[in-house]
Amino acid sequence: MTLEPIQYLLGTLSGSLVGFMLGLAGGGGSILALPLMVHLVRVPDAHLAIGTSAFAVAANAATSLVSHIRACTVDWRCGGMYAAVGVVGAMLGSTAGKAVDGGKLLFLFALVMVVVGALMLRGRADEGIAGAGCDRQKAPKVLSYGFGTGLFSGFFGIGGGFLIVPGLIGSTGMPVLNAVGTSLIAVTAFGLTTAVNYAFSGLVDWPLAFAFIVGGVAGGLTGTRIAERLSTGSKLTTIFAALIFVVAAYMLWKSTGSFV
Image (cartoon, rainbow, N blue to C red; front, side, top):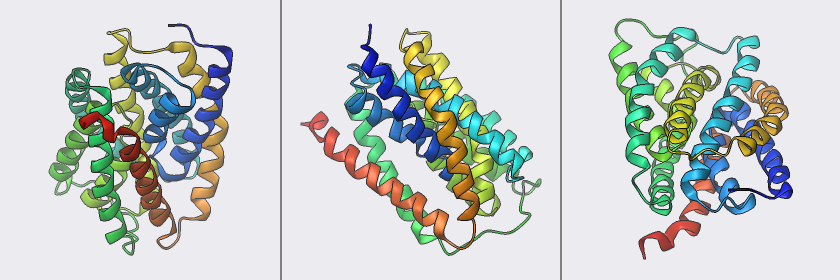
């Protein structure tokens, strides 16, 4: 499939928005990437959009991760544990996802987003425990959360940051800003796993993916700077939950016809 030059330009613009949200909230990039791929860039096949966006989001997440490393908001032990078991789930989930109609995937994913957004708002007053990490007692919970979010990530073809952030908070008690930074390790790993699986089926448009990445670099740096300023209180968590609800409403509206 050959795209028009304007589609690659729109891909670069979309990448900047995706990168911004990844830097700001550690997630949301991939759930923005899919609607942007389909409705702005006009990629005609949903699975091609999923595979391409998975690779682009993984690369943009890695860029944002560098910024969070500099800000000392990354827990490598927790992130490594979460990502290691999660890639197994992502591979299994992405294999299953390729066999499901793209419109149905988007609809089901939006329903999951509503639930996660509600849970985030419910716990927004909890700022976490400074210095909380992954000890032996917390390891089973961290690993189970990692596998579960990896499975969802692969099935829906997304980086999974909007699930990973609350997963890290719930399993370790770490502050939201540290969860955002740490989540980018898993977002990168899950996205690459899904992209590789889709690439084997020829479902990645590499030029478009790199256009996304170029735009995402600047957006990710800007989002990370703003995240640092919003790290106190419940501001970042509230913004994160609001993003989930807005995108979920949009996706439900656009994909309702999939079950009609």
